[in-house]
Length: 257
Image 1 (cartoon, helix red, strand yellow):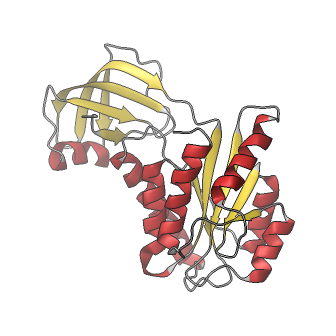
Image 2: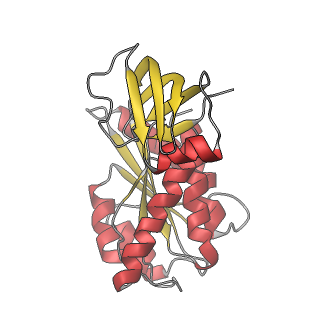
């Protein structure tokens, strides 16, 4: 069974080496001690959310501290092909369910999308609070999945800003029920193109619309920017399901799994 994971701020491990001790403080330490009830002698992982993972043993506990002796410190590289979920805002917390599940499945970043047909709107103070909530959701999901990387929740975009992101990406795929080509075929073609290009880091956007679907003019605008449409399956999936399903297939086809 894998060790429980708790997060420290990025760059916390500095020059630590095996045998060194590290003190985790604050809310994460309280969670480890009071909720998970970790005790002296138990194994634990501390990750910094940016790829570094300290594997160690609990040496001491306090009300808001967890002292760990490191046995190993690893740095996990990001995948050569990064997956970014562009998730349209959806009612009933379905958007949060989508990013939570996608994080557990390995998504690398998330972009909230204010699509034309989205009922939910992020404005003013609500936008700030909603963005923080999304970051909290993916952080908790990364901890649950024992990940060393916490996905980045990027700034919310409207369709115009999303079109610019599509143009800048290595590939962008719109999940659409009227698409002619299946997602697997589109991903295989995408992989073939990427393998013929120089460089090692690639980024693929997986674009999911709201419950009411993506407006035709939005599809046109994103397609003009370089996105392609793909059919995920024979059934219409909810906004909370489509993204995670696409992450699974993309992780397989693109060699991430």
